[in-house]
Image 1 (spheres, rainbow, N blue to C red):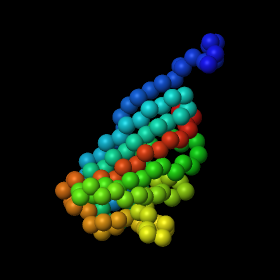
Image 2 (cartoon, rainbow, N blue to C red):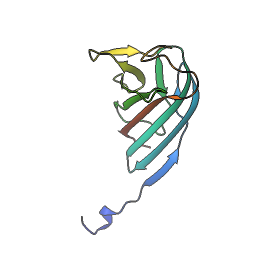
Image 3 (cartoon, rainbow, N blue to C red):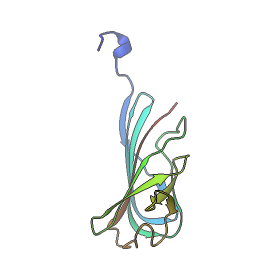
Length: 130
């Protein structure tokens, strides 16, 4: 509410960016919305291979602090698997049956189809000074 200049939205931006997923190949896309110092982002990787532990780097703006994005894996059979990240928000893990973290590999959390039909999806929110 309110009517003064303090309530005016003067920093709004939508865009695309190219995230980087280590130890993978595939098609990468990313989008973001920045409102003031808050950044909302989504990164998608259509996987053709995963060789070992995966990290996500290259956020659209530098982060002021650590954040913990949401991670989702979708296999070509339309099965969803949840994931988690390291405390820095960059290392991506599959969630084990007991709630622990498993490093991604060619067969974790499932055997990747190598056809681009499987995806890694990461969404998050953080604050920036940029």
